[in-house]
Every structure is written in C-alpha cells, then in structure tokens.
Length: 180
Ligand SMILES: [Mg+2]
Picture 1 (spheres, rainbow, N blue to C red):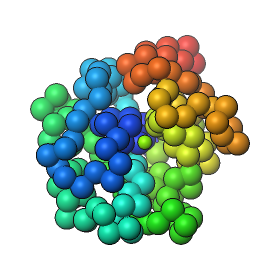
Picture 2 (picture 1 turned 120 degrees about the horizontal axis):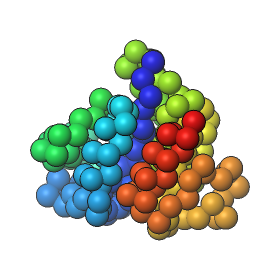
Picture 3 (picture 1 turned 90 degrees about the horizontal axis):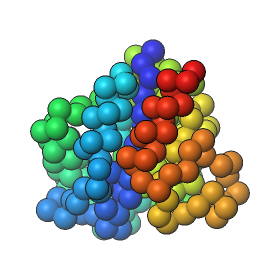
C-alpha cells in the first residue's frame, strides 16, 4: 500500500486552457516542479486524474490527449519527478460516469492497478471542489487550490487545506504529515 498524491491536471499542474488539444499549448503553473520534488522526497507516488469531457464532445482527440500526457511525463522526468500513472475520464458531463470526478473511479482504478493505495495517508489536490469531493469519496485528505472556486461555492464538504498555490499547499501538507 503506497501513500499517493492524486493531482488534477488542468488548473493544478498546467494552465487550464479549456479543452486543451494541442500538445504545443501545455504551460506549466509556477512552482510545480519544485512542489512535486519536495513531495516526492516525502515518499509519495504521484498519479494524475483528469476529467476530459472534451473527448466526448469531439474537441479533444485521444491521440492528442496521449501525446499531451507523454510530454507532461517527460517534462517532469527532466526534473527527476515520476508519475506512476495518468488516468483520464473522457466522458460527458451528463454521463455521471464513475470515473468522472466528483466520483472516485479513477482513484479506485489506481488502487487496483498500482498494488494498493493507502488512501488514509494520501492526498487529492485540485482547483475545483469536484476534485476535493472525488478525493473525499475515495478516503483521501484533500487540497483545494485557490483560483476558480472556493469551498463556499460548493455543497461538497470543505477540503483539508485551502491554499493560494501549489507550493504553499505542499508546505502545509508536509507539515500535517510530519505532525502525525
Ligand atoms: Mg482543474
């Protein structure tokens, strides 16, 4: 059972371009490489879980989605950072598919595929309350990054941490872990 950090992709690790389909348009958010290096040093494995309803809408191609994830993996690898796996939910908003956040299907799939996730000692990090809720449903602690939503915008339960950016969140996550 590995402690794991599940990361949302758009608005969390890269700028949310809304239905990103062009691998040349990937733009990393400030501090992401430093943040993930610090968290990797704490012994976490990393998984990306991203809703991609643009695929269902025909705006994002699966081929480009794969290429975008290859490039993201390569960019982080240049900083010595490894992702155990990428999961995408290419389903429509209306589908309420179990893989689509706020449902926890992608996190549960990681538990199956990666030989067990220690959810109670894991985190889900995202910029929307649907990320927080997916993490909560899987049994993780949660982080909401400020930007598009606040906990008050949502009927879902509040995150463990609400932080202005990923580096600040990282330091708070590490502080909480070390105080356990
Ligand atoms: Mg997002």
